[in-house]
Image 1: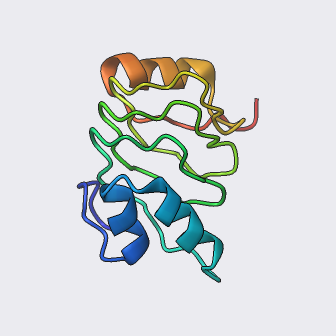
Image 2 (image 1 turned 90 degrees about the vertical axis):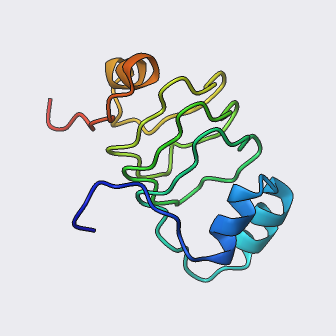
Length: 118
C-alpha cells in the first residue's frame, strides 16, 4: 500500500472482527487456507478480547482505545501498528518489539518499530 492511511478491508473475516464477534471470527479463521492481510486495518475502539491472532498481518493497523486484553500477538506482524490508549493487560507481543516501543505507542500513539540486529 502506498499510503499509511487507515482502511476498511473488504473481507468477511474483517467484518467479523469489526462486529466484535470473536467466536465467529476464530471459527472462520480456522477454516481459511490463507489469511487476508489486515495491514492498515481500522480496529479503533473495538473489543477484540479472545481473538486468535496467530499468523495475522497487522502491520500499520490502528488499535486506539481497543480492548486487546489477553491476546497473543507473538506470531503476528505488527510493525507500524499503533495501540494508543488500548487495554493491553496480559498481551503477548512479538519478541522483536522492544518494550519501549510498546510503551511509547500505548502512551503517545507512536507506531511500533521492530528492533533488529542488536
